[in-house]
Amino acid sequence: MRSAVRLIPLVVLGALAAFLLVGPLASLYNTRAAASRPQPSATTQPTVQPSPTTCPRSLPTPQHEPAVLPAQPPSLPFSVWVNDPLGVNLRATASKTGTLVRTLNQGTQASADRQVLDSAGARWYRVTIGSQSGWLRADFVVNHSISVMSGTGWSLMLPDTFQGRVISASLSEAAAGGDAVPFLRAQTSGLDTVSADLPAVINPNITPVIDHTKLVQVWSYTVLERVSRAPLDSCKVPSAGARQDGGWPYVTSVVAKSSVRAYSFTFFTQEPSSTIVEQVIASIALS
Picture 1 (cartoon, helix red, strand yellow):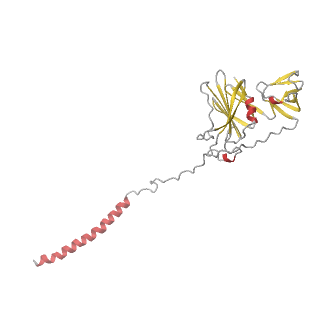
Picture 2 (spheres, rainbow, N blue to C red; picture 1 turned 30 degrees about the horizontal axis):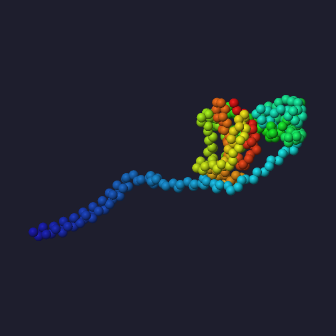
Picture 3 (tube, helix red, strand yellow; picture 1 turned 90 degrees about the horizontal axis):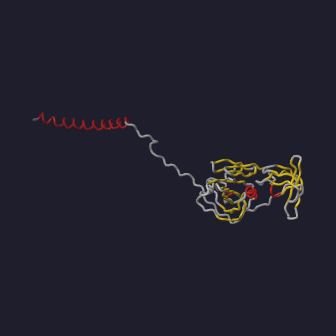
């Protein structure tokens, strides 16, 4: 009996030692197990990207028209180029009844050395081309170099300050070097599907504002010329607000229909009545 009593403290001490030993071993096992497991990479968590900075898409409507300075005529002598698609008659005198010397084709260059006004107030230039001299009407020629630009069923004379490019079989475009805004878009389409799509630099979310309309001659057709103002997309043209037109270019559009197709010519300028637009429209030939 006494021996059994003596064993009780020993059993209690053994149990206590086992409990104290198991605690550190379990902690060690958990630490090693955690170390042996693959830890999640720091890059596995998605990172939130800041939203891109938005740019203003709408520009305030201009409250006034830009000032247009009159073009100064060059000093004689100067070169001229035939702009009219049918050419111009070279005559012996400054009169429509003067003797015909020859007909100069569109694009022909000549040198002008004199100018006079006839009884009707029309201006005439005396020009020399090769060995021939004569008089021609000033409104059929221009005093800067021009080159032909053409597409399906149409051609026109474009000032050499612009470069043309073909976008598709039915769409061509011309722009000044380095300018994000085109000067001209020429499109052809079927008679029942006349299209005059605006370029991507025009803000599609704002309706163009009509400025004025008038009748003009395109080849042998009398058509309605529509002039409106459309805002540029300042996301695509960051300098739009600093332009002379306040970022609202004048959009001049004419549509002519032949027996086989429709032709649309759309111009984008910073002034309301562009002499260059009038010049190019006057040079259009259609088939």
